[in-house]
Length: 127
Image (cartoon, rainbow, N blue to C red):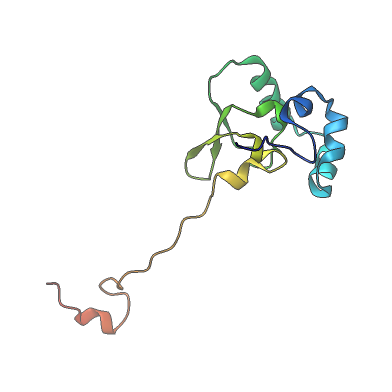
């Protein structure tokens, strides 16, 4: 039997019925401070569009948006600096940043040096 999800002792339904101030008190200090200072204009627009739109995915550059309970079950495309990565929000993501789920760095894989990259590479056979 799967255990029901709780965030700091509250179920998802309780979190969604809370006011923003009550929810902010449950968050860790970094997120609590960020939300108490107010949402940026871009973050406000995201929340308004989430409340207005039904199930259409939302595209955003706001990687610093904190995932709130009302976002659960939605799909948001987060910009990585190169492309938009789809993030499907679940209840376990509450209190984290959107940018944590759309990694912006790719792993660097170094190959052989190209022709002319160094003095010794000028003599690499071309096969």
